[in-house]
Structures are given as C-alpha cells and as structure tokens.
Length: 354
Image 1: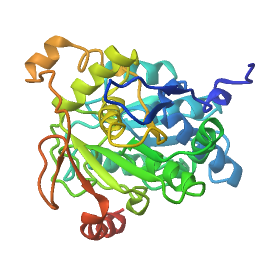
Image 2: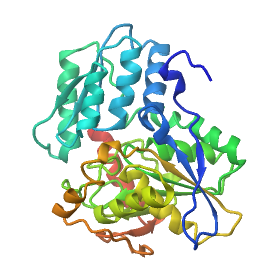
Image 3: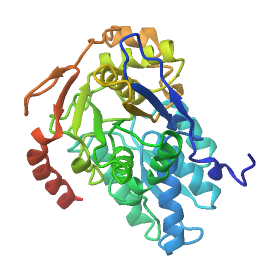
Image 4: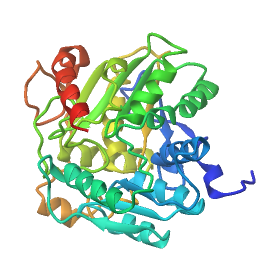
C-alpha cells in the first residue's frame, strides 16, 4: 500500500488474537493502536487538526500549542509540523528521553514546567499553556481533554473492529483524557446496545473518585484532573491497578504474547485476560493497546529501576470487588453505577473550572 504522507498511514491498525493462558474461555483480541506511527493519539491529533483546518479555526502557518507528556505530543508534532505549523508542546519532568528526542527531531518547541500546580503536574502544564496562548494570540490549541473531536476520532477505530469481527461484546481500555474509550464505546454501541465497557485506571488517579497521588509511577493512563471527555454514561465497570501490578502485567504481556508495550497496555491486558475467563466461548472481547514499550526501557523494563522503587513481579489472580467510595491500593473493581452520582458532581466542578 502506497501512502502520500505518513499522516495517511494513521489508523487501520492490526487486530491480534491473544493466547492468554489455559484458563481463557472467551475470544480475546488486542487492537494494536501502538502500531500507529507514534501511538494511539495519532488518531486524535489527525482528527482535531484536520477538522480545525477544515473549519478555518486553524489558519495557515499559525502555531499549535498542546499539553502532553506522551503520545499526544508526538501525534500533534507529527501532523502539525508536516502541515507547516510551528508546534509547541507543554510537558513536565516525567517526560521520557525517547519522547523528548522524538519531539525535538520533529522540530517542536518543548516547554517543561518546573513544579506541580494545585492539581499536580496536569494543572501546572495547563497554566503554562494558558500563558503561551496569551503570548501567541493566534495560536490553536487542540485541547485534547475537552475537544469533542478527541472521542470522535475513534469512530474509525470502531468501524475497523466491526469490519474485522462483525460485532464486539466487551470493550476494555485505559482512561486518561477519556477520548479513546468513550469515543470507541459510543460508536460501538450503535452496533450493539448491550456492549459492556470496562475502563482501566491506575491507583492514585482521580478520574473515578479516588484521591490523587502525584507520585504514581505509571504513565499514559490516569490523571490528576477529570477531563470533560470522560463519558461515564457509556462505561459499565472500572478497574484500578497499582504500579507493581501494572508493571508485572506489562512484563507478562511482552513475555507471553510477545507484545512490547507500555503500562497502559499491560494494565488493560491484565483485566482483559481475567474477564476472558468469566465468559462463554462465543464472547468477543477487544482490548485496546495504546502504547509501545520504547518509552519505558529505563523504567518498566529496567530491573534496577524496579528494584530501587520496590517493584516486585507480582499480580493477583483476580481483582477485589470493592464498595464505593473505598480508597483502593491494589487491583480492584467497581461498577460505574456505584460511583456515577458522586462523579457527576466532581465533573461539573471541573468543567466549570476549565
């Protein structure tokens, strides 16, 4: 297949049947979003930027500014610079050297905040982003956390799944900005109103009502604020994994499935594998794998790093079913209906603040 540019290669990612273990009953598939040029957020960057150009919001030659420490930064850099825009990325000290090297090689201006804000690193980045928008008044900001074209970008992903599988019974994905799982779930529910949607988060993330813990080691999923693009109404269940469990699952994903991924994919893999043991043989389960492992060679895949941070290779065989609003410290799960009333109040406050 010949493409006119690297942007045209975004999407149409492979769907892989996972082996799991000898306890697996259902049909378990991984949607390999990590195999986009830089990762899953390439879809979002492409959708948002092309729509902004189409509607005239993004003028020719004007700067693009976005806050990200991971794959969204690379996606914006890829699409924005290729289309002739100066790109500014606001990030924090957690950014890994590989992502930093990618951004600089693509010609981005990278701005790193030096301390946390009142809501952790995320709020510090948003404050600096606002400052840059004042300094560059004609600039365009994709605003991945609230832009409706973030979840809309995943309508194509859903169409790809329907094309490949015919139907999907259970969808499992990590949650950060909320776009991928919310958008994919909403689109898939048009084909199957009974679709079960399972969200995966990290302990110490506030998205589903837990207290913030800014020193969590996981990257790529979880958040210190609740993005408006998180649509609780399309989700049925939430699972949290701590750093040790997420790292262990990621290492198992590489060893058992030969998929070298990040901890978002690893956490989703742990949950999907457990779910696949509870269902019938006809059940089709799709796990979205968003991130490659190259960003984590010095952390998850580094034995010295794991040892220095007290990370042992340990993962429970099953999660704990908790009662809201318990604080979780290890792999636990809860139905969304148990927390949605509380979360709606939190979301209203966050939307008002933004």
